[in-house]
Image (tube, rainbow, N blue to C red):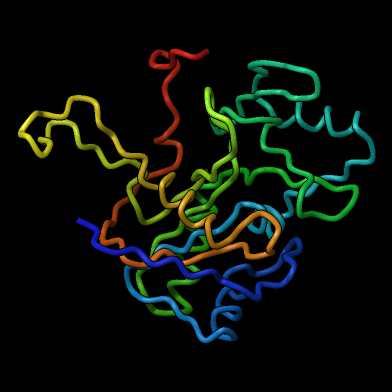
Length: 233
């Protein structure tokens, strides 16, 4: 059982550009603030800085360009309402506008989702483990809306070094009843918690979550509900 969780913002990461070595930038930011990583830490990183480092930036000169970009990035369109488009991405995520985002990026540009966020998480994890000599996990996040609930929340779109889901089916509750359907979206919980210290406009693109003792080899795509289980589409 987890007794205590600590969240540490990674401050001082400069603006990320295509081709930058993000791992080195995060390590340098930690060093300049007197922070470090220890075994068992979870490094939570917004996808935006990963996408920028990987060159997933597109020029958007007009609203028509933006709409075309959303359609190009979407595998399918689920719903439309005015300018809002709910899409399924090639990763299987159901989200607004195929994850194409014009916030926190230069005027006239938009940031796209990483092509393979799980692979991006793994690459960053290996890079930083080599630099620090510690064993960590990495969670890559994005901000999604939720069916039937107002407001946005950060969720995991990439993971390395953790199970995406903790399956409690077959275990018992505090009264001895067998749990039949309980699966905990662990990495989504981590993503939402980390956003409390990263924020949306503070230019803090990463955080350390400390105190979790789980390890594993899950993928964020494990969280995608199969169509035959989806009651809302």
